[in-house]
Image (cartoon, rainbow, N blue to C red):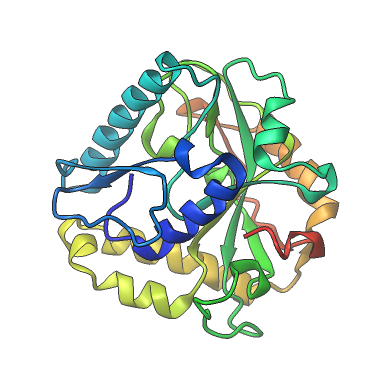
Length: 272
C-alpha cells in the first residue's frame, strides 16, 4: 500500500514484475485521490479509502487491511505472498544464480521467512545526489545493517502482520541465509529534505519521526569511522538478530544497539 509515492512505485513494479510477473503484483493506493502510477503495466492497482491520518492508527489499519488481502490471495490459489512497502526490495544473493521466484519456490517455508535488513543510505562524503534515471545500486554502495528491516515479509499461509510488516502476530521469524531486504527510503538526502515538508508528513505528525529515523541513517553512514565488508558480517548479523529479541516483542529481531555500517558486495551492484 502506498500514498504519493509514484517514484518508488514505478521502480517497485519494474523490479518485482521482472522477478514474479507484473500480473502477480497487487498494489493498494491509500486514498481515492491517488492516481495510477505511470509504470503500472499489468499489475493490479486499486485505490481505497484512506487508512487513518496519525501514523500509529494508519499503520494498524493498513496492515490489517493487507493481512486480509493476503488471506484472499491464498484462497485464490497462491502458495506464497510477499508483503513489502514501495521503497523495499527483497533480493536474492546473486551467488545462488536464481531470481526471487526460483529461490522461494525451491525453499521449504513453514509460516514465514525474512531477509536480512539493509538500510541503504547516501554517504555524503563520496556519493552525489541521486540520478533518478539510473539504478539505485550503481549510485549507492553503503548500508546500515538494521534489524528494523529484517521483516517477516514472505508468508506461506494466512497470518496477521504487525505494523510495517515488522513481525507476524503469534509466530516466530526465520532469517534466510540468501535473502536481503533492501530499504531505499533514505537513499538520497535532498529527496528526504523535500519530503519532510510534504502535506502528508505534516498531517500525520511524522516530522519528528522522520528526522530521528530517516536522517539518522545518512548521518550514521556518512560519519562512520569504520566501514565493514558486508560479506564478513552478514552471517554474524543473522545470528545476533536471531538470538537477541525485543523485550516487548519476542518475535521481532534486535541488534542491542549495535550499528554496523557496511559496504555492499560488488555483486549487488545490478540488483536494483
